[in-house]
Length: 290
Image (cartoon, one colour):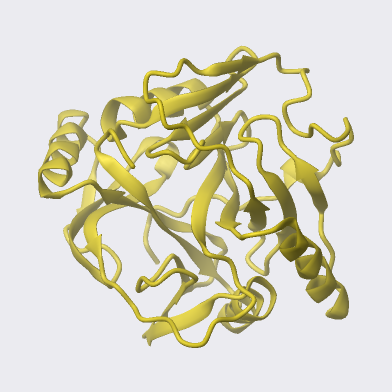
């Protein structure tokens, strides 16, 4: 269900200096499957699509692009018109593989967006322990209000929750409570998030991390904003990965945003503890497409 120009979150593409370790994290810890390897790009997915996560071999760690699926061809044209009206640089008429039609542009603070229609389906192999699908991302822009206004004005995202006075915004493109969460920060990408069926899957993630000498950096917790139960770890690139379940669904597009005080306990309904270092993790955008 979507009301705007974007139908769903498409993918996150990450440049990594150790692509083999990144693939091992995504397949052995998170439970994704590799769908294609093409040159220095590796495509992975949980759902029955060509890709939801892309690793690009590079000499730096950073975000290569954020992929969004347009509602249809008319929506793609309207987004292109809005992008050009704002004089945002269009850098490609051919996004990453496995899509029918689209383009890429550089948005505020150097974030690259791949906008496209009709992601290529991909028949999954045998079921594994992995998540159902890619769900959302969390960004820490320097100008959090400016990024919120850009997402609403150009890409038609809606506000679900507002935290404090220009501290954080949770934004949706369909019934999922948020596809993009914005928290005031250092201009970095914090985490990519994946939906699973049960809180038990979060415990099993912790067990897999423990077996290889890694650990959860936070969770499981029950968020107030979004209501989801979540657990987090750091992948090889330096980005954080979230596994979550029970995300709030917003079926009334006219629902006003829920407002929280910045110091109100919107981050964990089960307790007030939040690791001080949690928000220090993350990687920057890389707009030169190495």
